[in-house]
Length: 329
Length: 194
Ligand SMILES: Cc1cc2nc3c(=O)[nH]c(=O)nc-3n(C[C@H](O)[C@H](O)[C@H](O)COP(=O)(O)OP(=O)(O)OC[C@H]3O[C@@H](n4cnc5c(N)ncnc54)[C@H](O)[C@@H]3O)c2cc1C
Ligand code: SF4
Ligand code: FES
Ligand code: FES
Image 1 (cartoon, helix red, strand yellow):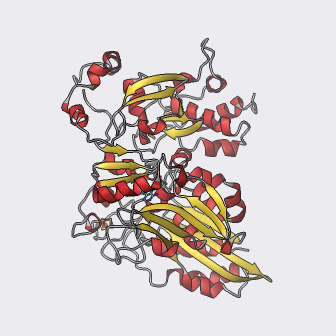
Image 2 (image 1 turned 60 degrees about the vertical axis):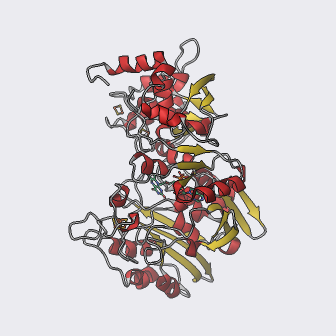
Image 3 (image 1 turned 90 degrees about the horizontal axis):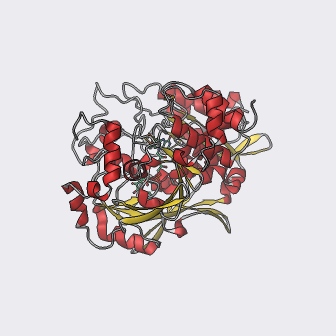
């Protein structure tokens, strides 16, 4: 009979402990594929653009699920769904930036199925690459998105190095703003990685979007109380409000005292292969009130050094305007 | 497959012949030689309150199992990539795209499809009745998915505002553009519109 199901023939393992999953991931190496909610995974497999031999399903591992309070903040298991994060009362009251970013991911059903770990580890949405073309990121020796005729409206305006793909995750800029850290485990032990160092651009590694190795599992994300209850702003501009990835998004956390901004973290998504920290803007807003005048004064700093491609120049005014909007009183 | 063979008849044929149909072809026999450690292929899954025994490939999506192995063709396959909502089902009362999940991940969980909405005596579910009363569907292709999205939404939030309902239904496309009628039906089913 014909196979209507377009899924390829692939092995499936369903371990119930992190240790077993890490052992499998180590043994299978590049042939293995960690499976969380599958919302990034199944596209790759159905299109035959990636062909791992086995999936390691993390769903049965209870230790990867849930949100708990720690001595100095909260810890979110990597297999916590995006919906749980968007609706969790602790996250909504103390770290609403993350709840708001999570609520902007994809569609309700995808948020019910997709996990935080998967959202952070998902691969870029550059369609040349996802189509299965052998570009730099796929191990080849060209970039199809940066030529004069290329379709690159969605691509990077910063940090290109042969590859011009952007980070697709809505939760990533929020977590960098909140100074989160990621805990990764392999058969050789665990390590803690700052969110800012977790995401990597093509100049560092052109085939991976994160520092995770093939045998490492993201176990949890820790958010310290550093930015708890700060003033947050999240906005995502996309072609449609549902399903579409950010053309540009902004995630900000600010501490305001005595009418002026004392400290700020300002990040943009959709403009670089990693969440882009607008350090120059952060520095300039400190000591100023949060209002339109400040927004107008600092907006242009957001895009200094930008190198737009021929179809994505609109991202320059868009980024600047998002900075202005984030700074409205 | 013979192109002239009527699709619905073909589907029925596959379901009736059960194992024989799924066991033919090298697409399947390659799978039979799996090394140890892989998942068990014979699954018991709870669909619409009944336990169904079914032989499931490791990579099989729930939508495929429901439609082509259990004969529950009310669940539609639209895009097959999480972008339309036609395949929406409830897993433990929560909406999921059945095209984008493995059948192996529903072990021990309750699956509800559009076939499971009406009562045993054939009385329509209140949401189904509201869909009819509001003339919500046009061509009907997206309707089973819209129904399941509406039922899932009202289980979590029995009296949503219109805006909350809009958000709750936002993962389901309608090619006929019947969105406002579906929203009216959700508001009617929640008792907020008569
Ligand atoms: C139609 C559509 C629209 C979308 N729109 C958006 C959007 O607007 N915004 C957005 O942010 N995302 C969007 N996404 C992406 C989706 O939100 C993410 O793909 C989803 O959150 C990924 O989570 P998952 O658990 O399903 O990941 P999976 O597909 O299971 O995994 C994704 C990747 O992460 C790896 N991985 C997963 N968990 C771990 C772990 N614990 N440790 C190490 N590696 C791991 C997997 O190996 C895989 O490579 C969209 C997806 C689709 C299909
Ligand atoms: S932008 Fe990156 S992923 Fe896209 S074609 Fe170029 S090298 Fe490949
Ligand atoms: S068929 Fe599943 S979302 Fe379109
Ligand atoms: S009624 Fe035709 S697609 Fe929705």
